[in-house]
Image (cartoon, rainbow, N blue to C red):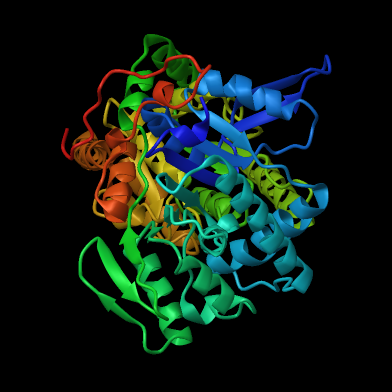
Length: 504
């Protein structure tokens, strides 16, 4: 079957495909599902309803294309790889995306490398993604582009004469206008975003920041409507703007957490740590995650509240990321030094306050850690959403856990009434929150966690996908044909009907 023969397909475009390709010790390539919030969010939706995911496989290794095809059969949707050269990866991904957009969008006003060569690499890479998308889609398809790496795709498609309906979702925060407007190519980026039919943000704050930036560039711009989706009129274009807080596959996490083997693994974790009050943190190595501040808060808690010594311990998992960047390596060393200082200062016979792991955890080990933890410390300095907060609560089937959440995580907009809220820049305040969590009685814990889980159950990943599609053109994910109707040669993977209506 020619992909162009099928109408109304669901197409996802992102910088990375949802798989990780590695060469093993025997020299053979292997593929596994990738990590990260976007994969966690969209893989269940595409598996249930099929479609295509377009992106870079993360390597230029020969044989990667065949691995994508094999992975497609297992995943239940087609993966279409985009080839990028090492130079393009350096300029587009490491340069423009991560030395300019990432820090500024997270409101870190460190010196940014506004090199014109980075902008040219960004445009070149976006054009490659556009050409790959145009080659395998029709004007009947809905094309959903994700995140800050690919803001130019819709405008480039229109320049090609394509009329496909397009949506864009920004997974990271959108900064205040005074910060965004520092980018030399601010107008080009805004013009490109205005070409999408729907632009989605994690929070109302992000949507407001975007509108204010557009207003600064186009003073005559106006916004119409109220509620979750509004319309922006600017420079002859009228995209819809929506706030769509991303969810998780709540039922899948809760179901896995309830499995006897994972419950037993959680008990083993607690037993190994002396059944103490267990704090848990899981973060990617990044300056936005606030891990050094979290460790300083733990040190302050031991100083201010000596009764906590020997009673609590922190399991901190740090996932490797961007290890080739000197700033990230320096942060890793800082974190390791803080862990060593805390353990050296406070450890006693039979008790070590911080257990630190620098590696990826398997899904099973991560869920077991969620189940074991009495309190999750989710304290980023700035984050678009942070799905760790939601995953922890979904796995807390006993409903006695405590979510300690940063005011500056996108998840705070939904969960602030029931989480233990902290300012991650306030070390003493976080120390007090740790103390309060230890002292919190079971009744209050259950009241808070049940409320959080009710929200997450209702506004799950399927609600998020459907809310975006409804905002884009009044349809739902279930309106798209299942993947076996789209792709010849793929195994039939359509699952049972699932209900995505709110409250179900």
